[in-house]
Length: 357
Ligand SMILES: [Mg+2]
Image 1: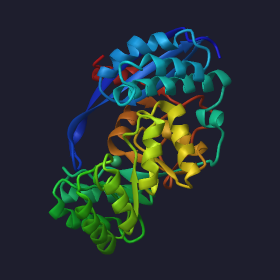
Image 2: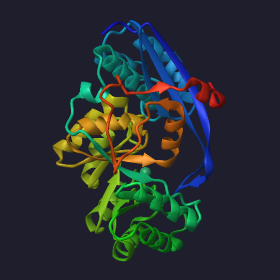
Image 3: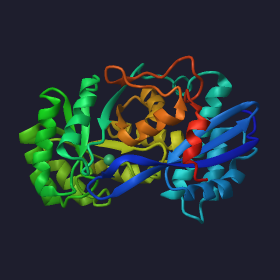
């Protein structure tokens, strides 16, 4: 590779289209932090969905760690050391992730192919699941969103549960009725339930509404609770979206069925590939969380990849910000072979009104 000559970072905060909440959090906007790396006439682009506070960490110390570096492992190692005394998990890893993704995008552009080509393909097309169904939605909004995805040919959808547990069985039944009997129905509690509550509801969701996936039935930090639910619930149990470091995935793998990881949190493409390999060693699949444009390339390449989250908020933002944004056809995303790197160009004029840093 050519040495990194310059790093630019910016941040954009986009309000939600409706009030949004899940089982444990409410939010009214989403921030994307964008990194651009310049080297030899190419510009590598990476991003993370995180706090604007990541901008400060990217400017100092991470920019200093990558400038002048010629290849990804060396740059990654220098960033990892630079965060040692500040805190690598959480915000540090999200900042590092945006740069790591930009490094991979830059390398693919320098080699003249898509990121999926650079990584090598396990498949041509990447299965997605529609994801949203917020607990702040009315029943009509919930039904309309989930049925809309199924109408587009996406054969699996996920809704949020856990805000008001007594009303969850009804919301889930209404969702099943809206999407019909064939599509897969997935639920995400974002850690809202206790283990016993989760077990009771798992049986209800399964028996009444054929729910096949229970994400974070209890807190991702409660490994004993996750194991209890995983061993006794009739559907698959998944977690991992908050993972920062490889050891987070290693400790989670024994207590879940399907591992989740987010390339914008888990130290980028480098970190996601590591998490996928750990899952492969345990004969488990990995499913990606959010950020569909980046995960499309990983999904085409990672052998044990299950599916990609087609998440309401991020689809909306990436559709607005990225020229070259790929939409699903019949439930799959296919990276464009003729577009280098991530396959996107920033629509700067459309991004500017949302700029916060
Ligand atoms: Mg989730």
